[in-house]
Image: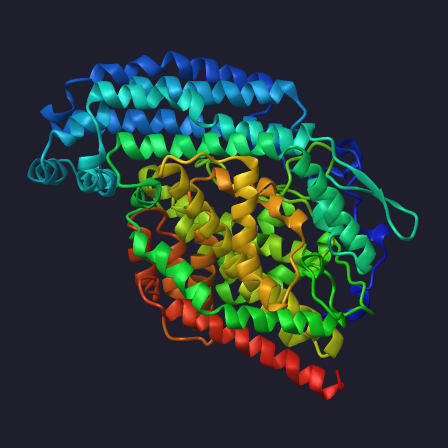
Length: 623
């Protein structure tokens, strides 16, 4: 961990960080991604798309022929993979072009066109799974034995056998495929309204400056050091969302009903079971997470009490949760400093790993800064199998943004290694393991940076950032997971979800987590509508994986940081494995058993260690 940290470089003015209101045309090209690696122009994209569409009917020649010979099965699966691989590239290009500016009707249309093409092709190819399911395992074994190239599809073929009871007839699967035309509508409505058409409010801050509270603006300004500013940000931003809670509620209800539809037609007991079965995750993992977190709220409340102590407030409020706790610091990082910090932290993963990291950082794989209309948040897109992953950021210069860069690079390296080591059929991996790789990088960054820092104020700040990460990924995401579970349970009982009922349920859960009734953290009524701000509720039981992944990453990173024999090799093998096995099995091979409480207990141990370190510094300084 050799980088020399020069502390003065972190005390920067806002002029060193690109403003969130800067137009995309004003951003230096090196801070934007280069999508020509996918297609040179929009016209080239359209040419490839038009040719691909003419090939859709080729899959139909295999109808009724799949089980007749190993060669027929292989040929069908290879043809299917070829089309889906190109569709993945087309979708990536259209989606990322749209994400650059969600106000663009042109790229919205391109994105919608690809969704339609997916539906069209899935409808034509819907016979594949039912025909394979007519074969028993013995016949599949014989086919693989006689045609070695079928080994690339072995996991897929056997997984079909596992889920046989939930798959339908050819005609029924065709109908299910056609529902793809509607399935993404609730999220599309949410995304466009939340990012492009919601009338974002503007407020005047104490210093007289104006703050536009769009998605990125809210994220930035909720961290302001002045408490009155923060309260105004929360009241104004969520007050605006509250004006539209009926719309948000109706839309989320539609999404839950969609999940219920798929669960019921495939004969699952409930939506949770349906969502988790795709990756063979036991539902007990989900329930245990919620129980473990609720059983350990005392540790979370200890964190909140430390936050209150460091802020020096009589009553901690929900609007204080993102506030800087070391008041005399105003630390901002340039993107170049962020790159150096990340490279330093990831050096233990080897020269080959770092070489690819440098390509990602320097060869325009990343779109760095927020601009008007750009999609909020961050992601890594590794679905262009033959190209390379891409990263979307909204970098505002905070440590959280540096950590987000490390996080998304974890996803990118996972995709890069899997795409290079796995054949296309097993290159894609589940979110359950994806968030392990990303959080692993975040944890390495924290420990590397902490070791380089002697200044106690900066150490306090960094330790709190780490605890904020545990708060956000373990406790907050589990809070979301519990909310998501309960709204599905309500709908599955035949009860309606409305903006009012969703807000009432959210209030009940959030106040329990934050100890509102115990006087630990005051949760204002306006926070009840926070659910309308969270896009992940449209992702079908996605958020719990942030929590499980943090605990899994904590356990794995501890092994690598301690130079445990074989730990690094196991980790590289893990991120090279793609979807070649079930997530629980992949993590077990890497050295972590997610069906036990051990990863969660290690996380609580780390959390309490960090709080002990903070309390030592506070006591030393008489605070």
